[in-house]
Length: 87
Image 1 (cartoon, rainbow, N blue to C red):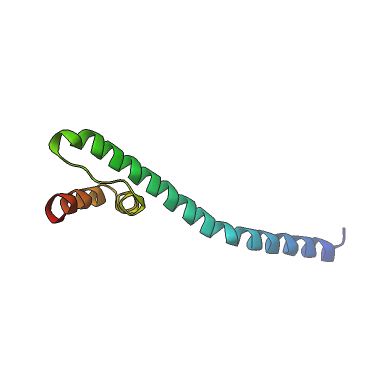
Image 2: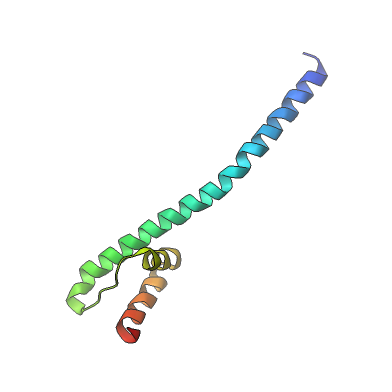
């Protein structure tokens, strides 16, 4: 092959990778966020299961799952404090 064809082919492959790789990053971010929200719902499920004997119950919905999934254990603790003292 001529060097011009090789350079053109490599340049085209680089452009293809750049164009295909760019839309995948927002999808990856959305996927990670969705997984964290599902883990947050699991946190709340276990909190409700084990906290039932102590009178702790936090409803499981999208907002509480997002808070507990994104913030983790401090988010779950904040939801418990809000549920017990403010509501």
